[in-house]
Length: 255
Image 1: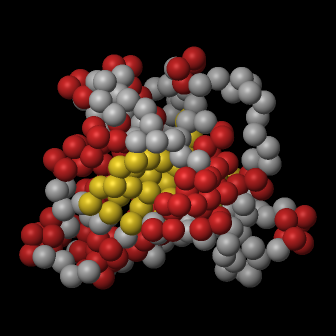
Image 2 (image 1 turned 90 degrees about the vertical axis):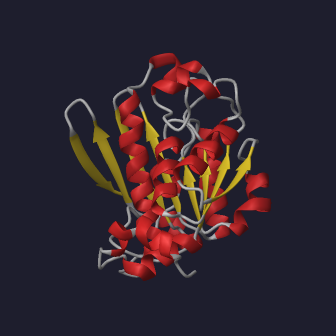
């Protein structure tokens, strides 16, 4: 994927980085990334990946923009209230970087849907706000054998990790599954949604931007992605912590 003169100028600050350079920027241009949700987490993910030159962005979301979204879902604005989030996000991306190809799917992500669409993508990013979608995304990415970047936020805290259970760690052991981190879905109603408890808007920007950074690392092959590590952020104390997790022995025996 050769870069045009305009693209070389647009991405000059990336190209100046020896770790990325022209070759890394070309990998970004050729990449196809599917983002689940154009909401609090999906908004910064989409904006930063579009700005970075990620060649094709898929957006799957069946919701519409509401006024209460705008406190955190910064890809939308007052003028798009009532519009489909996919259409609003597509228009924002076009204004930011018209070279990006956007594939929008105004529907709900599910495992059957993923089996039809996910094979055309290189990476899946889950910015959903419910456990059914998170487990479906983890299963779909593992089945398609592509990396998954997944994040979540609470009122003032957030987390993210990268899943590649189809591959081995540097020491030869199998990488963990999502269920090695969260074995079972919590009972319905146990964990309230942000609509019930609230969430600080800037927090979604912090976690979503970190998710975008992990995606850029995975596509360009730089750094050490958060595979087998859960990054935790407490916004009230400005503290980051990392928890390591591994494939459970029973799961290892099955593979």
